[in-house]
Image 1 (cartoon, rainbow, N blue to C red):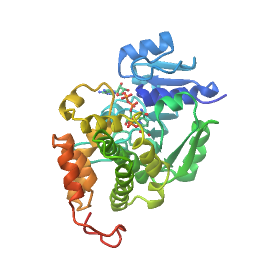
Image 2 (spheres, helix red, strand yellow):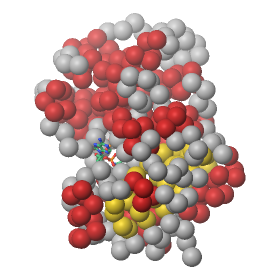
Image 3 (cartoon, rainbow, N blue to C red):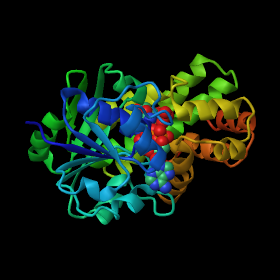
Image 4 (cartoon, protein in one colour):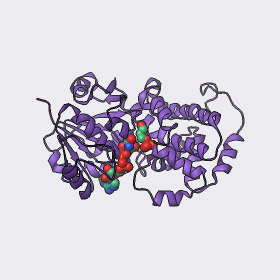
Length: 335
Ligand SMILES: NC(=O)c1ccc[n+]([C@@H]2O[C@H](COP(=O)([O-])OP(=O)(O)OC[C@H]3O[C@@H](n4cnc5c(N)ncnc54)[C@H](O)[C@@H]3O)[C@@H](O)[C@H]2O)c1
Ligand SMILES: O=P(O)(O)OC[C@H](O)CO
């Protein structure tokens, strides 16, 4: 008899995770924000608004009532980053293990999701699930590997990994919760940058340069917050960066591409029905970098473009910066 799992958030990723978890016949209670999504999942076994490709397993039950998650030991939270705190404080009962799957930094406070969750659900032990994971591929059962960072160390991993692992869904253990969150948050901003380069037609060399120099920014920021470089080199950092910077399946990459092609940032954001977390993370990350004197020129550039600056002008400014050493240990003061 397998234990029930809860999932908070029935967007593309929450629905795909529910589908993956239910693939062994496990019962999954999936909380959706919109009543129409609850109804569609329970009546048609589909989520046409957020994950139209999947026919959902019978053991997934959608609900619009958060108290239906009470008594479930393992809950995955998969809301957009900016609403996580607001949703978690409404939980009637805190789960033993709360697995954070959102990728972003809270605007206004600069908090990572584990800090938001610690405040909103102090009774739960936190883990972070992050990695290269397009929702539609996970829902289709395609092979996927993720970092599962457990604040409770090996003991929490022993509890969680059998609940989360499936033949085609492979978690890797880490105890670096901060590192796991930083990778996923920053890669979204860098994916917008890569999309801009694609939209401007600047070529594959430029994209590879952005990935490598963006990774240097991720490392600098991560290390300043105590993340381990080894974590950032893994699935939740470099792995996710490479995926998201290389495909129009990424909402962040696609947003950047549209910006590079000349669309207005304000109009693109106003028209969105799905979340492109990088657009919310860029301003707060740029602010944190400036406050901490961490050189993050690509993040600053993306933030400027989102605020309305000309992509071509911003790229020209990036290229015109003084030449420098590649290894950041050689020249910590400049970008
Ligand atoms: N889609 C993916 O492939 C993927 C993969 C890994 C991680 N993520 C991360 O998962 C998180 C959720 O992304 P998604 O792709 O599932 O979202 P989505 O764009 O598919 O859907 C938006 C979600 O936001 C919810 N929502 C909107 N307003 C809300 C509110 N006020 N309160 C609560 N919920 C609200 C909607 O109900 C829906 O669940 C993001 O942080 C994202 O970066 C997504
Ligand atoms: O579509 P994106 O850009 O939100 O990326 C989805 C996932 O985070 C990829 O790992």
